[in-house]
Length: 480
Ligand SMILES: Cc1cc2nc3c(=O)[nH]c(=O)nc-3n(C[C@H](O)[C@H](O)[C@H](O)COP(=O)(O)OP(=O)(O)OC[C@H]3O[C@@H](n4cnc5c(N)ncnc54)[C@H](O)[C@@H]3O)c2cc1C
Image 1 (cartoon, rainbow, N blue to C red):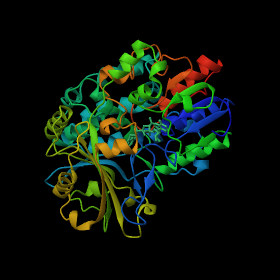
Image 2 (image 1 turned 180 degrees about the horizontal axis):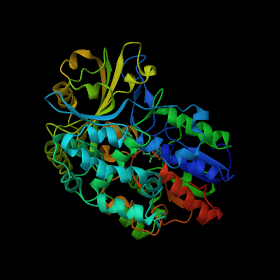
Image 3 (image 1 turned 135 degrees about the horizontal axis):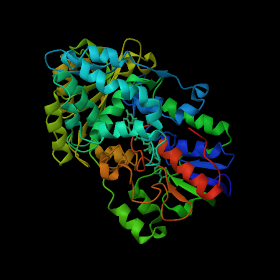
Image 4 (image 1 turned 45 degrees about the vertical axis):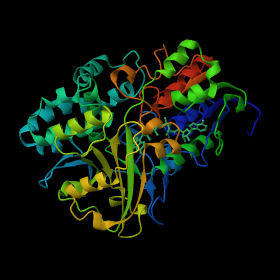
């Protein structure tokens, strides 16, 4: 390690580790950020996975929660090379007949595209979108005394039920399928409590800063965070997998951007029996099977909206998605799974050689599944985009085991750092006064296995560092 001791050491340079390191460093502490791989980023890395000149996002691709993150928005990331790209249409949802539903920039435009559900959509979303600036910092964090209790109560009333309940407000196939696709981001059966909240958050982000992504690839967001951290005086050490806490230099605070399972392996003897017992019982959610394509031409979707969308949700009607998600959650791979597909190269020419394109997709599979879903995913894309296969130049696939081998935080292919059901939403990884504190003084968990959970937003890292600043250094955290 480059120095003998630090005020704080952060292990793991994913978006949350980076956010934690920045939060501590802005208070003038000496901070070392250690990363096991040769590059920083965690879920924010990009590489030529298929052919030279085709840049693929290895993990996260689209960042509605990143561009809207209350923490990232306090940082001068544009000055460190970040440029957000906002696709023409945030998300589209095709049907076999060649039509599609779409999440458009404004509530008004989306409402008008939903026919008989125009007024229902407007009534549901217009007040929420107006409240989003006050809701975002409250929803993307731990349970805490609400700064805007009325807004939060309104959101809770709508978001606490399942997305199935929320869908009863709508009659059209389009509106109901749009909701199903949004709710499926929770990786929960659609009739589970609080899946409505996930659907509403993704709709609200679409109507605020859009479903944007970094030009040149997701790695650019990590690079901007790392560059800003270093500009503040922070130190980064890559290529250093931590296998025991004894390996680390002394520090007053230690923050770990890792899974509860790794926490047990890294320092089991330090945890109280109760904390260890809780970590052992932590539950992981569905996994993903991912495919990246190098394409000779854009994906020939029948529906025009899909040809202008950054993200496409494939899975058919509300009922089809509800059936396949429930099946996968309970351990059986779906024959027609819900698929998230993105096409960044339509809006960012740096992703592929001139005239060529990239495609990124994953489907939900049971945790730990080794089933090869390539043909199933490609058949599904072909269903909505006949001629797709002929455009494939090369592909790269990752199943759940390869995902976990790539990043030890993705247990069984779970990309959310643990099951995101109502029981684990605010008590991840354990029921404690602060979910970020471990049972050992000065050691904190800062990964997606703490509130608010998965996604690229850095809020778990910010709140864990805020806890450490208060407990150990008696310093206030930078305000959001
Ligand atoms: C295929 C896929 C698609 C996704 N798509 C999206 C998306 O489009 N949008 C979105 O918002 N989110 C998406 N996500 C989720 C998102 O990437 C994660 O929720 C997010 O990266 C979690 O951030 P984190 O900092 O908690 O952990 P990670 O990003 O997992 O970073 C953890 C880091 O810690 C390092 N590390 C762990 N243990 C050790 C150790 N013992 N020693 C040293 N280093 C260690 C790892 O190498 C890694 O770099 C996706 C994830 C995957 C896998």
